Image 1 (spheres, rainbow, N blue to C red):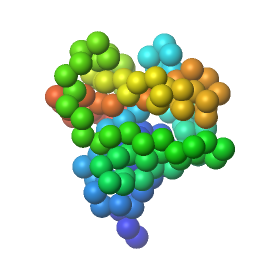
Image 2 (image 1 turned 180 degrees about the horizontal axis):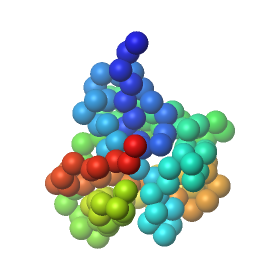
Image 3 (image 1 turned 90 degrees about the horizontal axis):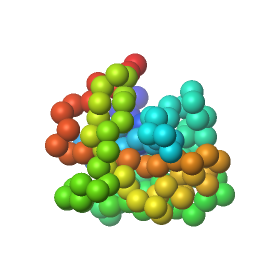
Length: 127
């Protein structure tokens, strides 16, 4: 059985070996900053994930694909926030309005795509 990776916590998995470097690098939150899990938001599991030509590529039924650059230097503190993941405060960077609109349209609720800040210590994801 091949190893699988989940670049966006709660979304689809991929067998691409390069995805190991991006395991749970992104997550989805609601507009109140609460991390959305599959239990809270079942629509997440319909989002497929692929790494392609330097981009995180997201697809979902009835949606155009969304391409997010993988490695961007995070130097704009105006889009940096903290969210709680299993009781741990995690520094994240908002991926912007286009990604938020895409996630919100797919999930049917206001949602944001967030990236764990590269300077953040290891996130202790709940089991």
